Length: 429
Image 1: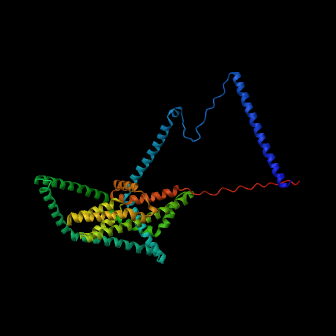
Image 2: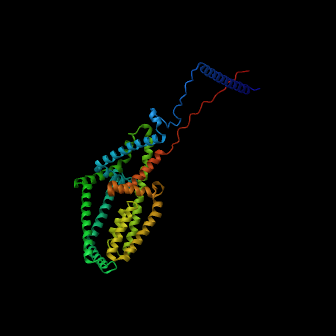
Image 3: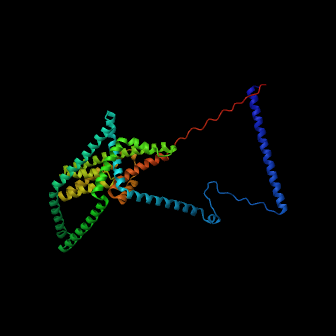
């Protein structure tokens, strides 16, 4: 027999001896328990009742007999209820705080969206060799000039063509009144006057409420001017020092959570950049498609309406539909119902191409969201903060979706320590 086989045999004997000792100890303990129970029965004293502890899953943790009498389902529902109430109160307080400092929050969010839009251009200039400050200034000034130039062209075209459109609109309304009086409806002049007067009163009342709401929302001219300057300054520094600002924010987290926060934040930023770029591209394609249709159909204000479609496309689903409806209404007032139906067909075709081809292809999986949360987010944004809320609702949902997925993703933990090898030292024969 070799030395290794003798060592293995000794280990096997030691293992069997240990198992026999454990069995013997268990048998002795069982025998002592039986004898104590028999002595207690003979003496007339009952053995103490063993009260089981809480379940292994920890679901029932009661502090008194009254709690133990409450059904388990009701205890769980109560626990969930008070936790949800606390979360709701904290959320309500957070919304109140954000509403109080809205003059700061809104410009910062707008600057963040603009930085996500302009960041690729700054990166391209940096790769070419342009200094960071100069690249940021060039991109910001160019973008501001493009926006101001576009708005100037739109306003000028509206000013030039508004008198002619008003004349045609008045003629169209007169034709509608003639049709309502002489057509199958057969309304009298008195009824028409009452309906027209009621419509005018409704417009006046709602215009006053809308004007007062706009004044209350925008605040004073000083607040608007301050917000505009804050947007420009914040956009500039986000583009130039965004990485340093992010490293500073990550440094405020505990050391163990910094790498996870950094990973989730950078992934969320890439999602925001992808969303803004894709939205701009989709909006541009929508504006070009509907604008070409308006030019071919000789509808007035083709360029301003195309610009309106471009801006409306930033509000998913709702914005493009409303801007298209405005184009159809202008075509109806100016050129009649045949041209309006043609414009409506062009708008529907463009919307279908956008929803079924452009959105899945351009957006990609990075910002893919189901239409239901998109609609709910836009609706909640409109209720909370009007047009601005609808504008930022979907980007916020997309960024939160990416951040939560990154934070909840299972990370491969560190490899388990390698146990030290058991070295068997055999005694010499």
